[in-house]
Structures are given as structure tokens and as C-alpha cells.
Length: 177
Image (cartoon, rainbow, N blue to C red; front, side, top):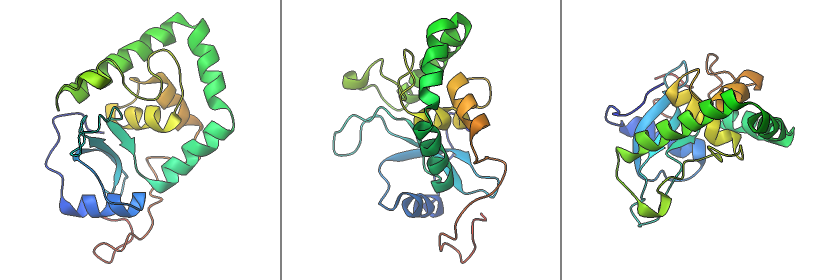
């Protein structure tokens, strides 16, 4: 897990992320979380892309096995459970609001964008609408920051503690950094 400021992003990391996403990467400012093997799991992206597009999703889940696991949890209706809990548990709502504020502060370090001012990702702070986004934030910020990201990771078949990387064809090694 890594919050800003980030170390410089290596070209190798960008190559792996492009393989993970199946497309070129855009405006990456840091690797916010890594697999135990060292490969990127979460990237951080500028709040305004080079083409001028506002981009609120500062923490972006890239690991294919992690994204598949979050998609499975979304399909299994975990977000419904999260939103029900958010509506009745003031302590969790306060934690989620604090996670939202931390997310915004982290992103703001890379520039202010009026069009996304106050908008974080994943529905924070009033709803849970994307487990990919809240789990990416939890992986970057660490346990105890984003309660619904933590819950998604806890219920997931994917674990940040077990390498499930493909052979990305970088350096001739599967996974390893």
C-alpha cells in the first residue's frame, strides 16, 4: 500500500499495467498497491487526463484476478448489503465519510479539477456503487480506512497476500518483479 507522494513509476510497471488492462495506460502518477510478487495491483491516475477529461477515479484496480473477484461480488449483490449497512450504522457512515475525505485529499495533491471537486469514487460517501473502486482505495490506504473496501477484500476469493499474476511477458518471468 502506498499513498502519495509516490516514488517514480517505472516503465516496466506501465508495461505490466497495459497488459493487465489490455490497453495503453493513461496519466499514471503512482503505483498505489502491489501484489506480493511486486507487480502493480492499484494505480493512481491524474485527476485530469492529458486530453483534458476530468478523471475522479484516483485509485484504479488493475490486477485481473482482483477485478474479476470484485465483479463476482458485485453480481452477488454485496453492494446492496453495504448500502443497507451504510443507511443504519452511523459509525460505518462516519468511517466511509472519512475515507471519502482522505481519497479527495490524496487526489488533490495532483491538481484541483473543478468538475470533480468533492467527487471521489465508488459512490463515496453516500452509497456503495463500485466495489472495484472502494477495494482499490482500501488496498492503497491500508486496512481500516475504507470499511466497504475492507469488506469486499475480506469476502473476495482474491487475496493481496497470494500471487495470482499471469505471465505478462515482461522480463520473461511470470509475475515477479
